[in-house]
Image 1 (tube, rainbow, N blue to C red):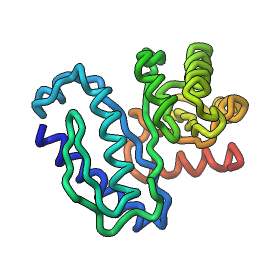
Image 2 (cartoon, helix red, strand yellow):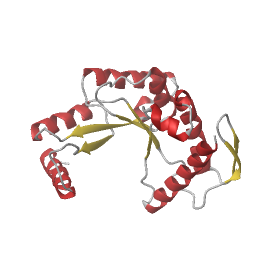
Image 3 (cartoon, rainbow, N blue to C red):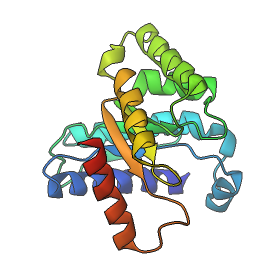
Length: 211
């Protein structure tokens, strides 16, 4: 488990440095992944990745909020360690990514993890009936966990590939109606070849949508 311990502390330090450099504007996005081969390459157990990530979230927040941390968990052990410099945000917001365009319904444990632990979450799917059902369920679980569902950030996604201004406006209005707090724009796809084309697409989106 040495890899896990070192990685968690390194992520905490790197995130703290980015938070300082950005003036306290970092949101750290995390996810448990889906590919067992990645875990095999690291010598880690794919089946325990969710529970291990929960412990890692705890460790990250301790390192971001306390000057000196001593911790003993199932996967992590820390003796009198701290970060220098500490982040501006104490703690840095942790956002969890979950779901996918093909299978938007995340595992039950994943939805409850978001509800209990996340500051916000990235639904990795377009807004449709099944996606709306996922959002409603996570908000229900958030309330059951004793948290305010309205305080849980939600970042919507708008995919520009193969779509036009009417589609963009409809998507933005849909995310606004369901209470999204943030919005990301994807320019992925084969239609755009250069960085300048991707930047131009984002500028056009901003102009057409009126952001």
